[in-house]
Length: 181
Image (cartoon, rainbow, N blue to C red; front, top):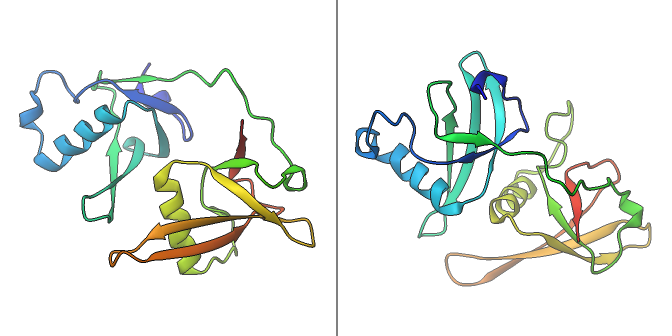
């Protein structure tokens, strides 16, 4: 498949370093390290943007000091180091927020309200969602409030060793999650 046929949301699996005419050492060290980490992950990555140059994928890695490192890579037609993943056989039925119960696990797919005009999110809340997305683990619904909205909680360890707690709500108009079986 040609890279020009890829669209936002498609998943591809990285099979090796780009352009087999070059050795991995011909790449700059930063790009080589990103490809090594992608190959070690053995998971598909999602196309996040398509512009006039081609499709882009975005990946996040955690450094040894705990900070998050973001990288964007372009996928070109010349590279034969990737393959498009078929859609998952198990499609998730979109659930209503009111169907969630305490103990259900959900996987966050994106930051709530991304791409919607006029949607405001506090910077601290955005940071928490970015850290949760980088973890790539599901969260568990911990309580249902009086209005029937589900809440989940998460914890992060700070650099000083203390733990910070966050409690977030799953809003009715959010479509950034799927239920995990």
